[in-house]
Length: 160
Image 1 (cartoon, one colour):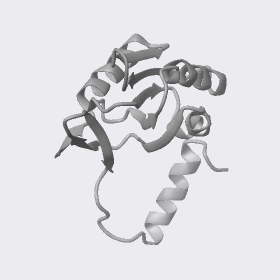
Image 2 (image 1 turned 180 degrees about the horizontal axis):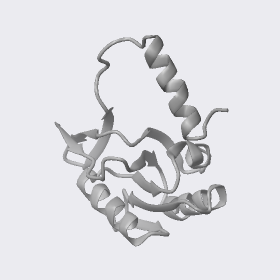
Image 3 (image 1 turned 90 degrees about the vertical axis):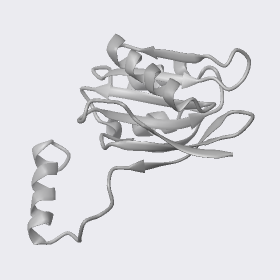
Image 4 (image 1 turned 60 degrees about the vertical axis):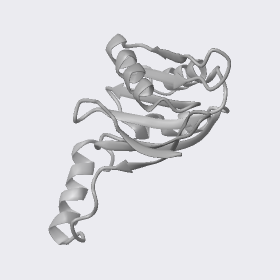
């Protein structure tokens, strides 16, 4: 078995969700869950099928996001993994809906940070071991940092 990393290729400020599921209808069910939860969100989904023709299945309502999702899914190449890229919304807006899709087994990350996906590759294929989401801590939050965090959350409308 070999371990490698795949860096997610995306614009710096773009959010995405990376997960694992178990069935071909994942793409359609994720699409429906997103639209029903946040109809204004632009998104692209790609899913790596793990049996039969083993195709990358895709869907979404924005062609460039579908293309970005498909490109990253191909780079990851892990069976039953899916990736969702989004604009006009944040993962927190759809994360519970995504988790509640019956085929979804796990969420590896939901972030706009730089991400490296840790891939295990064996004779049978590839699988996601985990992710490196962002960077290591550089210190502990102080009073100014607490104020900045609280101001930021209010600025973007997540706290009153």
